[in-house]
Image (cartoon, rainbow, N blue to C red; front, side, top):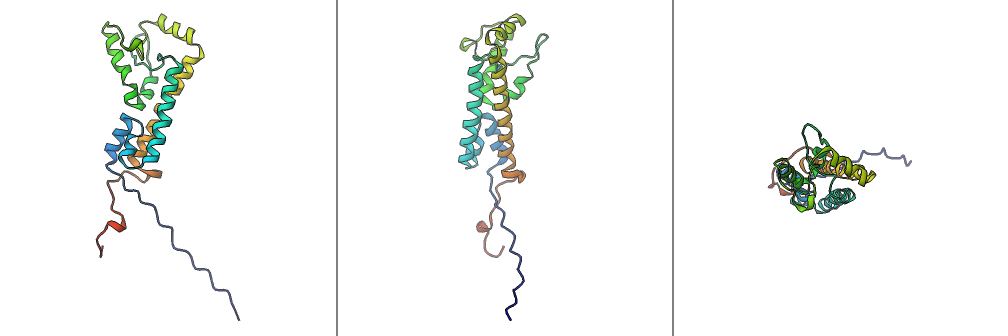
Length: 179
């Protein structure tokens, strides 16, 4: 008689171990320039994807708002909390900090006022009036770009699917025989 053999359970699938190069340094690089931390970790496709998506979103929003939607200001008349999120893109948002220091100390903004804060509430109201919804949409795009890069920073730090921070792990093929 041919009795069916009981099914044997298949061995558990091997987990993919991605050795990450210095996750802390990669996270710093990912903040400084979107995608750079992933390039450092030799995850080139992911680095290119983050770089293109984050920077395109950021610069599209900046262009939509004619360079006026990304600025740092925290004073009696305005609390620009959006900049904290926009700063998530790293160096591309840095001119806003420089412009804020210049304007706050009574100087003339550089780069034709790109990322310079408004001098007074009347100038800000004028920006809202002339740009209309583009001011809000540009702000939204740049904030989303910063948030996307914050996710990319965590990916550079924690690795794929949240493996947790790890120093360069040796795979089984890297171990000497007998280990």
